[in-house]
Amino acid sequence: MIEILIASQNEHKIKELKDIFNHTEIRLISLKDLSDFEDVIENGESFLDNALIKAKYFANKHNRMTISDDSGLVVEALDGRPGIYSARYSGKGDYQNNLKVLCELENVENRKAYFVSEIVLCYPNGVYKSFRGEVHGYIANEIKGEHGFGYDSIFYMPEYQMTFGELESEIKNRISHRANALKLLKENIDEIINYK
Image (cartoon, rainbow, N blue to C red; front, top):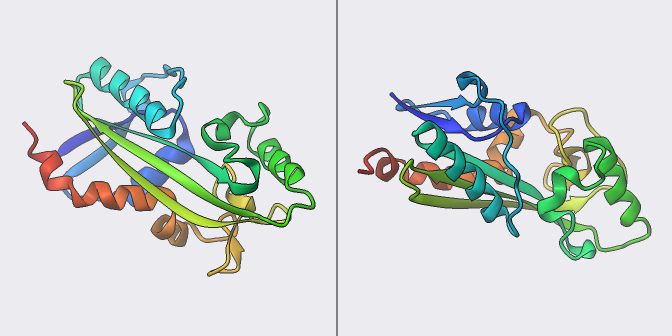
């Protein structure tokens, strides 16, 4: 059994990664499992930059294979905002972040948006691989749904006629940006496990 460290302190993200990435030869562990509560400043200019900063830092610190996910919401009419600033867009947490996006889109017709997940897997020697997943939808007119986290309750999927916040987690975990990135990682898993 190979252990891979998740470079995140976000409990929602850790749970989602573990739920989606079920592999018989790999066990995902969190920083909390190692009693490491350090946060790393994400000052990159892209999702890939930020994921790489975290993955490289903790892979080196703990001398073990590490994955990191940087993800966020990209809204077409807002010139790509909130983008890499998704988690801290309002500075006041998820609910206020959602309200800020809804407020900025008031009376705006174009509500196209997509979620991005950039997952980096980094070895202790600094070599890394990256996997990008996206899921496209629209920004709803109001907050709906109790499931998920982040912007899930305003991200509307027309195929399901629901927001991510209304979808059951098992459905979301099959179609989300994070699931799409992890599918790509899984396709490369033999190469990853056998890397020397």
